[in-house]
Length: 279
Image 1 (cartoon, rainbow, N blue to C red):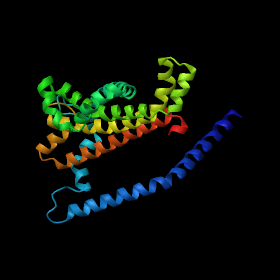
Image 2 (image 1 turned 135 degrees about the vertical axis):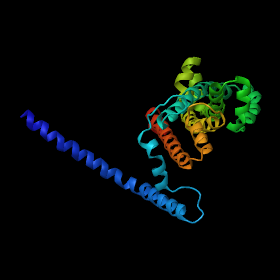
Image 3 (image 1 turned 180 degrees about the horizontal axis):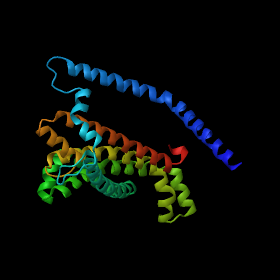
Image 4 (image 1 turned 30 degrees about the vertical axis):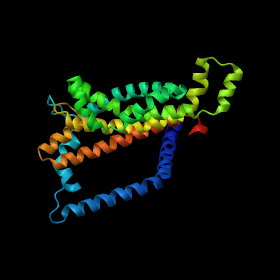
């Protein structure tokens, strides 16, 4: 009897797996076709006379070692793409976390205090328009080391969307919520936890989602300028200096995939935390 039950479990699992694939299959067809058309057009363009960029076939031929052996480590900066991306992600994680903490804190402060908002808003609006690369020489001059300078560039790039969206979310709290808080005579802690944070949470997640993309862009730019550190940005610059265009293209593909994964992870986290009526 037990054996029969175990045998019957396997077909059920396979049927459910097949049914889930069938449900997702219509959604996979359009992007698959679009990617295939893009690769074909790219390859045809690479075959035209005078083309300087390699096509997808040549990229795979030139970089198959990097594709199939991403974990090699020969010391120094001679590492596989896994370690290059991991080093960049570690920098992003550190600076993005700090930017989220500081940005949410300052955003709440500005949102609830009109005087602070009027005093700090011009400074914030001025600083947020500075591109990431412009912060590189300042950070290097102030911090004197590549690693902390790279972390600062990510932090100063990622903090603004978090700060601004949090402040907007706090100012957009419905007046009815504030009236209820006054009637119930909620303490500041109760108001913060039960009204302010839940009401501003959609805006906060919007800022966090924008910031994670900007942080990933910033670390790539910072690593290209800051030589001698392990990271996907410096890998691109080093490959370009050695005229390995195929390696540059492969790294760009990895950067795009990682950026997409980071965005999807933030969307998943938002869907898990936000109530259904706020999504």
